[in-house]
Length: 487
Image 1 (tube, rainbow, N blue to C red):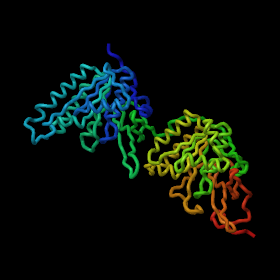
Image 2 (image 1 turned 90 degrees about the horizontal axis):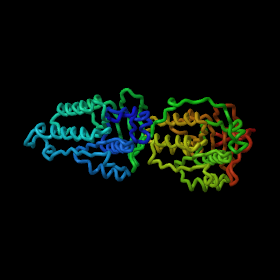
Image 3 (image 1 turned 45 degrees about the vertical axis):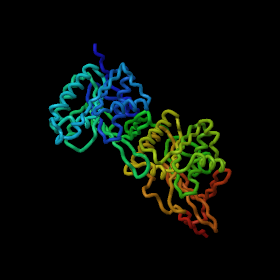
Image 4 (image 1 turned 180 degrees about the vertical axis):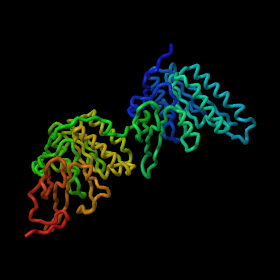
């Protein structure tokens, strides 16, 4: 009696089954297309490993003698290819075929294809695999003299596997030829892998589900990374896919009565606050004030540092009377030093979602937004992705703080792309000159939920923390950096 397939066949690739809404439809033929180095063989190996884990018979067809490489990859990834469930079949390509048609004694149609394909099909019928991988069609094409004969060969394979007994994975080096379009047409589903080489740092990889017949999936590009244990996919965050319950407005104290007064009572929970100012105005310290206040309430906080080391952050916080060391020891505050050369937007989003969903984080600080922008490769859609992320955090009642760098000592030059529409509240910090001394000023220029104070106040930093003074009513032009006294 034949073992029936389940309705959904998991791929065994972390994150991909979420995109495929469970996995693949069993008994169908799928194409994994991509240029060399994008991870097609790694993808196939994980697909086979998941089958072995589920107790399914698996057959891997390595065209051109790739079986040795497969075994080495499996060993490096810690994958056990159980001989009771796994079989490897190698399709060798003779040296004469590699010489090309001009130097062959025999026509390739007289020698290789029929024998190689008969052996392959005989092995499939012998093993009766529930998961079958043929890696790769690009090498298998060498057995055919022309495009037409190769197309017949692929159609013959599809005809042999049409019964639905096998779930077939084909790999192919992607191109722009008519053959590639033909392969995508005859397969039940197509997943395209791509790698992007940046000017600096490691390559970025992403995948696209081109099609998946008779099954829902999450469209668009999704970032992925190849680690020692295989591929890890980071599904793109789409807020519209989630269902939310409307929450009542609630305020949280910043830990400073003066700052709460300036904000109209405190920080709204589930909102994004942008702290904007030039370098040295106290943006990170102001965010640190809110971190300590949240930790004192027993809330979990995650801080992402894009331009500062963890040691530097801790030392500076301690010097300003806002030490986070005890909260780190208690597990209430977590510092993440982000390597700007390593992360993609998808990977960063998944990291934040894990913190919120699994660790119960209620407050998030991104310091700084300019560092975040520099870390991500595709700036064309970066603000759209960031908007999706912040909207998700808002619905989850997570309070977010973004520190935003302004260029110029007095902050006269703003960022190239405005971030004001992303924030629910904006705190503006400025340097200003007064009687031969450089001072700091703070004001709230935006708050979507409720009223806020419209004054400009002096802002000072000391070993005892932050202090906000009285409104600067006797000065005109504080925000320009060079105010004048009002009579």
